[in-house]
Amino acid sequence: MTTATFSQAGTYVLRLSASDTALTSTDEITIIVNPAQANNTAPVVNAGQDQTITLPNGATLNGTVTDDGLPNPPAQVSVTWSKVSGSGTVTFSSPSTAVTSVTFSQAGTYVLRLSVSDSALTSTPSVATLQGQVSDDGNPNPPGQLSITWTRVDGPGTVNFTNPNAAVTQASFAIAGTYTLRLTVSDSVLSTSDDVVIIANVTSNQAPTVSAGIDQTILLPEIIILTATASDDGVPSSTLALTWSKVSGPGAVTFTDPSALSTSVVFDAAGVYRLKLTASDGQLSGSDEVEVTLNIRKQITIYSHGYGFDPEELTVKAGEKSLMIRNRTGLEVTYVFTQGSQSVSVTALPGKTAIIDATLEVGTASLTATGHSDWNCQVTIIP
Image (tube, rainbow, N blue to C red; front, side, top):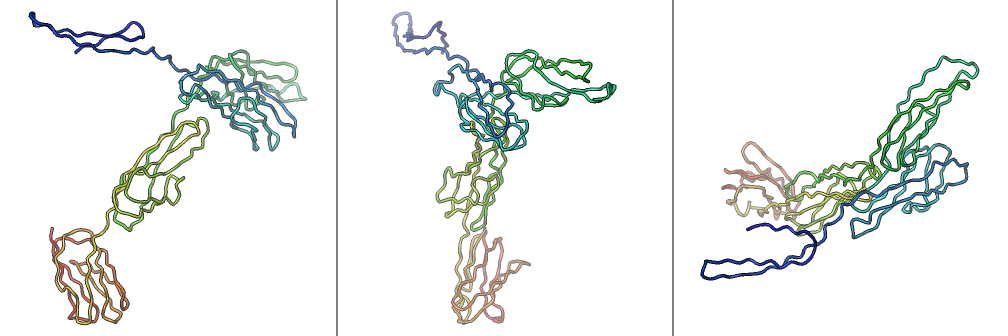
């Protein structure tokens, strides 16, 4: 056994020869070497220039997107506009195109985000919190107050400030790179400024992390509660879409709330089921599966007549059982099942069936009827 390396792509025929010094045998194999795939890089996105508008006018967002065409397929990108911050509701006429119009429900300062995915990598603007500090001697007075302004000095892309007139604010960067930002403060006569350098990295979207919970084994007709967890990196948004589904199993499955982390679930048949929880952030999805084993209690039928029980003695194996006591006495009867120091009572109307679910342990147990001392069914429980 050996390995072979190739200097370029193409179709190669390799031959293996073996000789015992007198005779020689050969065999050939064909190897097809494909060209090396280029490394995929995240799309480059620019959300456009900051804008100031007057209501009720809207704004036109002129985003730009470039990509390397990988992976192929699909060799195309998906675009999503979203609101990062702002006091009101934002409505995009076409949130999945780089150039779109937008309207706002009320006045204020808004930060909007343009995210782009090539199905493997996602580019969204990086966000930094700027912690500026300002002090002054209070002169001249008036005005006795300062004006504050954040600006971009240099950098490869645009910078959006949540509030450019506050010392502490957030800045978002459309393109990765090194930026110099300047904080300028004026008392109306004198002004001073200071610069800060920010290195912005483009955030790559990661698929949500999902745990569907621990495997469960129950006895029908108990109710199963599924309790799961899901987390995400908040890209391209902080909202996850959740979906429970059945992967395998012998019967139908009904989820009370298939879009919730915690939900009850109903099965129409016993058996082993695989259930899946999928979480999607709109671009990438993650999933996890949980196994649920449904067992059904074995039924033991005992008839109750006016003269006693039929049978009066029975032998059963230990485990989860359902005693089905069919009342044929014509009377309302209270039955008592006793095992060790534990007793369970149930009442059955004439012609009806009383059901006692019990965990039978090795030893003996008895079934009696209140007011009928001569009615007795002895139960012997074996391993």
